Image (cartoon, rainbow, N blue to C red; front, side):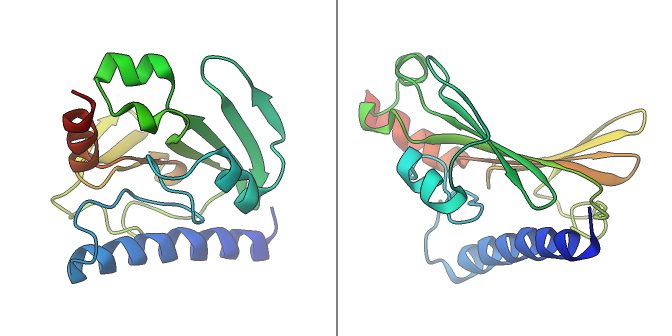
Length: 171
């Protein structure tokens, strides 16, 4: 991967993180999920994803409706809320077909826990096994996995508050 693509990926991740922090601090939307590239869990639908990322490189139709895209710096996997998930979690049925999770697999990222400021952030729970460290922030719907101190995976999901509200509407 060239330096320009790595810079774009870093800028995209940092911009998303800054936007999330700003929106939380300014109280614009109290329980907004972490979004990536204009795609937001429990709001965006397949058409929104394809509008932002183009045609998927691979697609797994059926129960999960998983889409994979090649992007600068790695791959993105987008999963969607299924009827079974709605039923199991007792969610609002209108959420079926919305984005469930966004998972970025980073290739050669130079980001570290320190550069993403997650090591001393009390919102993140840290779990380490050998050279793999995971930082999870359930409240904001974010998680990062580092291998050998380098960012390998970023996860974006609905916030705990959004899921709670969606369950209340589904009952």
